[in-house]
Length: 179
Length: 201
Image (cartoon, each protein chain N blue to C red):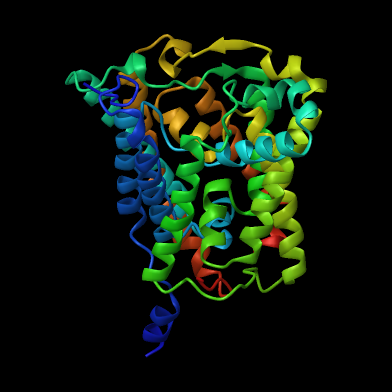
């Protein structure tokens, strides 16, 4: 009886190796079709560039980083492959959530040992670090670590190794957040 | 034959439709694998759930070996496939910050989008923090512009870096992955036995 209840509580996820094969084939298809892999952080970068360019165009033009991503022909930086990819990622996630019954009302997921507030502070801090890091790293887990390493880029391997390695180094300090 | 878009076998107007479809499949697979939950993801650092390692490594070796076979069969011109350039100093530092952000925040950008999509407030906060981080980086860019481009190794591959062929590199990755799958399976079994609180969400 007990096992039945536990099973009911467990969400329906696909087998991770099956998921990995699907993701690998998708990545291969992206290389074959577009000549580049998957990306997630690029869309946020272009969004930031667009907003800053709208609010303070002179400031954006004068900054060597923003100006790299403002199209010379005056078109919007948002009219870009990366933006459409991220929109797709959002709706693809929503579709999966709807099919497997995880698309629900707004909630905070956190370890029972910490409050929702602590979890949100950690999520925000982690996001900021990831945001800064992804720009130094030329991409995040998707663009640099996964797609970069799969296309045998040495830089991709560095980002992947550091990302997981440093995670393990600091895991002990942040264990209260998770276990 | 491939890649199709860089060789204009598929023309411009289809670009964004394809980007939407590839992105959609990406989000679907991430969510369906359990990556919309930060507690599933962070499990990789504490041994109670190695789903990240399984999905990530499987995907990486499938794509890596696939690319080499596609090239071998003459289906794709690897010279036209984007190899992420290596800026050693900047990428080491970036990887460091991302590792820290990963274990504190429990998401990476792509997974946080899927968390937002199914209604997780912690996903929304992470994604907002991510956006703020990118903004902070860009605002401070003049201060570290030189560091950002220092030690530029160009589009160097792993094989070129170590002086062996990329086929061998791919083979090594497959071997390491299989060993990692087995070892982490053993660890996970052991950790979960002593864990009563972790309830999958």
